[in-house]
Image (cartoon, rainbow, N blue to C red; front, side):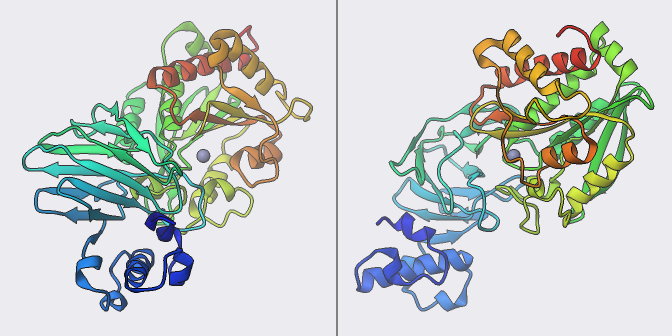
Length: 416
Ligand SMILES: [Zn+2]
């Protein structure tokens, strides 16, 4: 069993559980692992382990070495621990905010070197596996490119060779889409006539939850929700393209805004986004499994906001998963505009062919997700709009724009 498998063992596992033989090496490994698992070397109880083994690990979010520093100490950043394995070889470790958790193995860190040297880094996932193709930015997050990664056979780690560059090199599972980017997007939306912005509540850690609205007063409402799950950035990019399309000045969008109202929460889990979480809010809860229990500030804020919106027409919640997918209710459910999911899906196939999102009308009907709760509570179509982890940016944009156009046509009862 590899050491990484041992890392998977939670604190309290016995040396034997790590699969190594009895003896000094096993004990060293166990102590190291227990330290890493329990508190990433911060525990005084680990002081008895021999220094040269344990000191090889550094606790995140900042790991400082003579010629290089790795840091996850920024909004959206995640870096749990590091270990130098050779002159230019380092292992970086990424842990989720808590467990058990969906394996959305998010990582985001900066590399800083005084003089540019080639490095070989292994990305190691504790409680997860390599899921997101690394993206690299040499201009502090303005532009991103994909970086080749070689996953290990069991998928628990991947090896990368970042570009040798002086200054700050950002590496992340997706192009960063942080709260500052939401703020500038909302500033931009607000500059359109008739767009209103308000704070509808605060997250569990006290961050503002904001909402945007535009369109005809008192008209039926298209509800849009974003970023319940922090790493699902392709869904955030899709939501932005979708909303921007609704605000264009062509005849379709103008007609739509005269007949409908649009109400949206761009980021419903701001704490998770800011803290580089894999999935949860700061209380260890999946916000999109709390629509029903409503134990969390985020889901309650969304519920209470929705309750005063008036006549709801359709709701769409933007997410990310392996492939582009629309999760919807089945066709035979009663309710207003019950044909909307089928009509949307068929129109997307007409416009996009094989690139159209797959429709799944039977996904998680019993889980307390926004989709299920909104549909059950308001008897309207409620969809989860999922964007693939690896869908190229231009395709995300194009699909979202077409989906916005089809949505407008369908709600206006026009051919789509
Ligand atoms: Zn999600």
